[in-house]
Length: 493
Image (cartoon, rainbow, N blue to C red; front, side, top):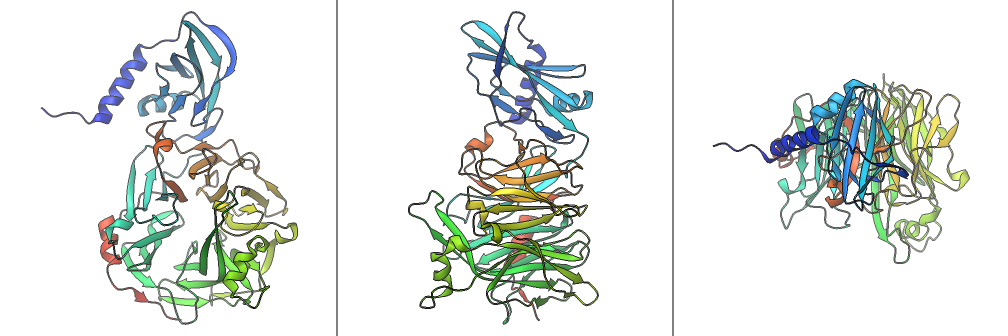
C-alpha cells in the first residue's frame, strides 16, 4: 500500500481540525494585543504570497484563532496557526482584508484578544527570490549554498552548493549571484579559491571566465548587469576582515583598494574605468534606462606612511566614509563621462553604500551608517530613500529597526522591497519584504513566510543577497558543477 507523504497527511489533518473548530461561545473581551511570531500583525502582503503561518506567544493553556475575510472563515485550535494553501487563497479571494482574532484560555476561562488585520495588496510580487544561505561564522563557509525559493509557496531548491566541488584540501566560496532584469536564464555568480572564476549563464549557454587581467587588482567582485545589453559592471576589490575585542560589532570588512570595470560578455573583454588611486569605488548599479552607472566611493589618503595602506585603514576604519556617485554612459562606444555627486554622506560624518534605483527611475534606495562599506555588520545601518526628482532624502523609519538593515532589492514592478535584517535576534539575517506605494511610502515589513512558523528560529543560517527573479533557475547544480571544473576562459582588455 502506497503511503501518503507526511506533508499531505499534515495538510489533511489541519483542514479537518479547522473545519471542526469553532470560536468559544462564552468569553471575555480583553484589550491585550496579540503577540505572534513572525510578527505579522497589520502587515500588507501581495495577493500571490504563500500563506502567512505564525505561532501565538501570549499566555494561555489553549488557543483558538479565527481568520475571517468576507464570507470566509476558518478556525484553528493550536498555538501554531497554519492555514493551508486552499484556505489562504480562499481568504485572499474573499476580500482585501483578513481579520485575525485570537482566543486564549486561562484558568478555564476564554479571553478574546484585540483583533489584528493582514492587508492584501493587488500588487503582485515576483514569484521567486534567490539568496545565499551561510552560517554566521568567519571561517566555516564550505557548506554554504545559493538557493532559490518560490514566494507563492514554500518550495526551495539549491541553485549551486560549495560542496559539489569542494574537498578537504581544496575548498571554495561562492557568492554574488545576480540576474539581468530578473531573468533567471541570465545569471552570474563567483567561485573563489579552488576552481575559481565567474560563472555566467546566458540564454542556455553557461561558461566560466577569469576576469582578472594584468591591469586590474582582482577578478570581478560586486556585479550589476546592464538592463538591456550583454554588459556587466563590476567592482574589483582588495578586501580584508578584522576582528574587534571590545566592540560588540565583532567584525569589520573593508577594502584597501577598489576600482570599477565594465565586462563585455559577448567579447569576453574587460574595460577598466579610470580612477584616482586614493578613491575606493564599489557596488556599481545601473539606472533602469542604462544611461547611468551609480556606485559608492570613499576618498582615503594614507595617514601613516611607515605602514602599508591596508594596516593604515584598519587602524583608522571609522574614518572611512563613502559617498554616492553616478557616471553617464554612452552605449555607442561604451564610454563613461565625468562622475556626478548624487549624495554626500561624508559631509555628515556618515557613509552611504549599496545604491539601488527603482524600476521606474524615481526612487534611490541605499544604506547609511556611521562609517565603512560592509554595513551588514553594523547595527546602526539603516535604509534611506532619495526622491531623484526633488533630491529629498529621508530615513525609511517605517522599515528600519534598532538592528541591521542592509542588502535590499526592488521587485520588477517597483511595488515591493526585499531587504536583509537582523531584527529578530541580532545574529541571523532574515529576508523582510515591504510594500512600497507610488507616493514613496513603505508599509510595515513582513518576514519571509515559512512552511512552519518556527522554521527561522531553528535555521542556523543567514540569508545573504536576496534578489527577485521572474521564475526559477533551470540550470541544475550538476550542470554548474561540471562547468566549474572546466578551465576558465581568460578575459582580455
